[in-house]
Length: 215
Length: 391
Image 1: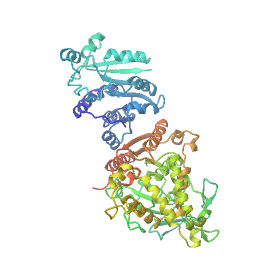
Image 2: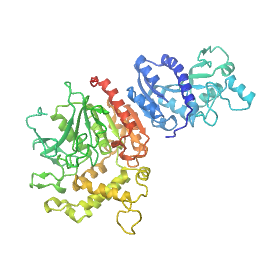
Image 3: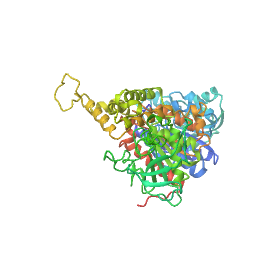
Image 4: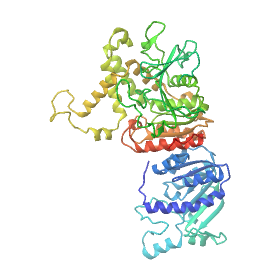
C-alpha cells in the first residue's frame, strides 16, 4: 500500500468536485448496468447509482476509512489503488468504469487509461484542467507552482503527480486509440461550460473536464 | 437442539459441548478414499435460530482453536478464543445471529480425531485414522448443519485454517452460503508454511514418547515434542515488531545474563510457557493431522489451476480481510482470492488492516477488524432481511 499524505483540505475539496461529478455521471449510467468506481471514497457515488439506477456496483479505494464506510453501507469495495490493482480485473467485466478526479494522482496515467478501456465498455474520466487561466496566470505572474482554490496543496504535498490540460488529455486519448463519446467542461464554481466554445478557449476557462471514452 | 433426525443421538458431551453421533449408516467419505464411521462432532452454539432458520453463522476455528468460541474454556478456564468478536453487542452479535462452531474432524475436543476410539480395534485410532483434508472438515460441518436442519448459512467466517474452511465452503456448497468472511488465509498453503509445519511435525515425531503415534495405548505423551512444535509455530503467528515491542531483549526475573541455557530472556520464558500450556489442551497426533490438512489445501489445483473457477457463478457476498504485518498468510495471498473473486464476477470487498500484531491479529482487539466485521454483517443482514437486534 503506498499511503500518501494528503492535505485534509484537499480531500474535502476533492470530495466537493466529486460530488459535482456525481449528478452528471448518474445521468450517463444505464440502469442495471455493471459499474466500477475507482477511488470511490466513502461510496457516495456507488450508493447513489445503486439507489437511482439499481446498478451492480464495485469500488476500489485506498483509504481504510473509505473502505470501512463502504463496507458498512453494503457496498463491495476492494482496498487498493488504480496503479496496482486494475491489471487483475478481467476484460469487459464492466459496462462503465469511473475514474473521478484521480487520474492526475496515478503513477502511470496512460496504463491506467488503457486498463479502464480494457475492463469497461466505457470509461468516464474527470480531472482538474491544468490549462486553466488561473493556473497559467499564477505561474507567469509569480513564477511558482500555483496553489489555487481547486488545487490547494503545495507542490511537495500534493498527491497529484501527473497534471494535464484538456489538450494533453485529448492527445493521450488519441494515443491509446480511444474514441471520445462526450466531453463536459466546468467552471471553477462547478457550472457547466457550453461545448460550442472552441477547444482552446475551453482549455483556458474550464477548471475541470470530464470525458466519456470508448475503446 | 432436540430436533435432529431419529438416527442421530444428541447429548451433552464430556467436552462441555453438544455432541452429535452419526451412525455407521452415515459415514463421512474422505478425500483420501477412506471413510469415518461412526462419526462424532462436538459443537457449541450461541444465540438462537430464528423461525426462518436464516440467521445462522458458522464460525470455523483455526489449527489450534476449538469450538469454545465465546464461553469459558473447559480445560484452560480462559475466555473463548473469539470472545472479543462473538457475543451480545459484539460484531458477531449473538442477540441477532445464531452462531455455531464445531470442533474440526481430526481435532481433539470431542469430534472424531486420532485420539478417538477406533471401533475396529477398541483402541485409539492414532495414525490409523485416515488423513483428513479441509474439504473433509467442511463436509462434516455440512452433515452437522443437515442434522440441525439449517439449509443456508447467513455467514461462514474464520481466520487462518478457519479461512481455508470458509473458502472450501463456498467452493463445495455455493448455494448454502449467503455471505463469507475469510480472514488472514490463502487459497493454497505456501511452501514456507508447509516447511514450518514439517518442523513442528518432526519435533513431535522426534519425541521418544510419541511411539509412532501409539502413545495413548503405551501410556506415554510426547509433551516435549509438541511443546517445541508450538513454540516454533507461535513465532510465526506474531511479527518482529510486535515481539520487539512486547519483549525486546528484556530479561526474565533477573538483572544479568546467567551465562547458561536457562530462560534468561522474557521471550524465551514466554515461548516455553506457550509450549507447555498448549500440551495440556492439545493432542500431538491431532497436531500432525491438522497441519497436514492445511498443507494439502490447494483450492487452485482443485480447480484446474484457475482459482476463479472455484467461485464461478457464486452469489455469495464476500469480505476478505488481511493484516499488513501477517507474514504467515500475507496480504498477497488474500489479494489472490480477491482477484479470483473479481474475475468470477463475485460480490467482494477487501480490507487490508494496518496493524503490527502479525497473523494473530484476527484473534486480538483490532478495532478496524471489529468495525469491518460488524459493518459487513449488518449490511448483509439488511440484504438478507434479518431483523435488527432489539435495542
